[in-house]
Amino acid sequence: MALQHRKAEPWREEDLEERFVRAQGPGGQHVNKTATCVVLRHKPTGVEVRCQAERSQSQNRALARRLLAAKLEALRQAKLAAERHTREKMRRKHRRPSAAAQARRLEAKHLHARRKADRRGPREAD
Image 1: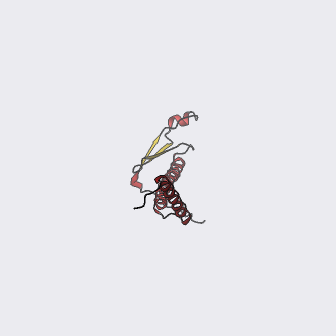
Image 2: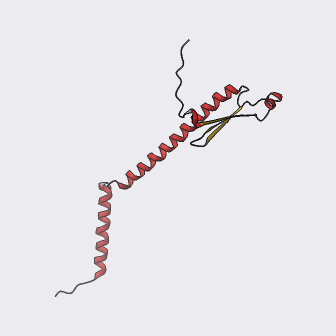
């Protein structure tokens, strides 16, 4: 039997708060008498997941941990994307204009100067 390689969780055990509550919905007496719903909360981030997909508490516990890991990873990816976006925005803001953009701006300056010169009128020679 081969050993399964298990990926390390992105949290420490002491960061988790785990509760077992009664499940809701259909299921009759089994649901009403046993606390199979698992509520898992990651204290540092406040992310909380509830899992009552299975009738077994241990299966729900494993599923809740997987769901929590997925949520924390999505949160981490979103934070990285926001940081990347900010860096990219600053890079675009501070880069030098292209040669074509510089040429367009210079041409606009010359045009503006010609218009102003035309408004001045004839000058008297001293």
